[in-house]
Length: 376
Image 1 (cartoon, rainbow, N blue to C red):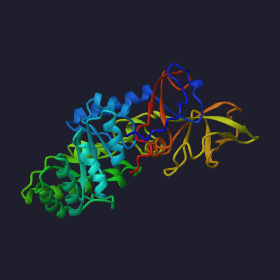
Image 2: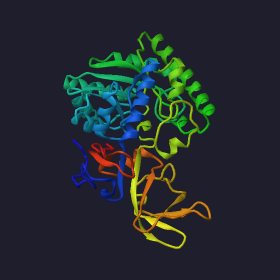
Image 3: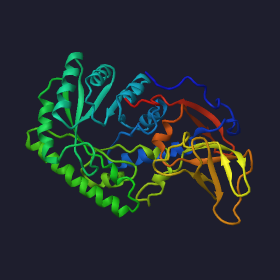
Image 4: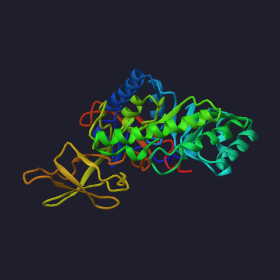
């Protein structure tokens, strides 16, 4: 079930951008669709499957737009996210994360009766509990063994992958689908050469894991992984067959700070704010860190030569970046590019889609953030 609040959206279809109440999360639909088309074309040309990460947008409408352009399905990180997307009609969802709690695995098995569900594992206990839940429901689930390719988080050493793959195929209702090999720590290395080196190492680890699986007598049909910062390098490696990039669709400030190494993506996600107070040398907007996540740094002020300083929960402080720079006036609209799109989206109830640009555009769609707060 969707966890989205019933609170009314801050704009209606047909409104001009000036009518969007602040603070609000706004999608520039023209830039968003160009981003989707760019990634879809890259995956197609590279001969790779595209499975975008929906933990970024948590929105059925965005997932459907990606699938309409050729994505095979989406990834999520949480059972609750999978539930919300399946409830909304998404038919192929991969939980690219470990789930250990039996009651959550019961929910996973129930979802597998309604949609194609895949999940990652990195332990015998996780496999056994998943198998029990699937058997009780008479369901079928695809299983990826996660390998630690450099993140230092979840996943097993490559030599252990074969034994886990054999555990998977020993259980009725579980199908070994391949390896999960995502290197999150590589995504925000600023220099392309540093990202390339990290993914080269990840590729060698993934290859060793695949060799472990085949040596155990199990076929390894797919290696899946990659993110917006590194997908170019996974694509040329010859190791990965599926890309999981997600942030490309909205392109936050932190990803844009990377030096590019492939296709370029545009900022498409903005927080609309308004100047609520004005001093001699600063302006205050009504979007503090309850409106945008700050774990990856503060937002960028769009279209103005101003810096953003954290003013607390409900305030952002703008200052001119040079002596002759102009500050916005009291009541002016200020557009902010969030530092990190994923947790920013999770702070809002709706994505307001605007067609025709941020200055004179018109609201074309209002999408509920279906899996907002789905952290279970």
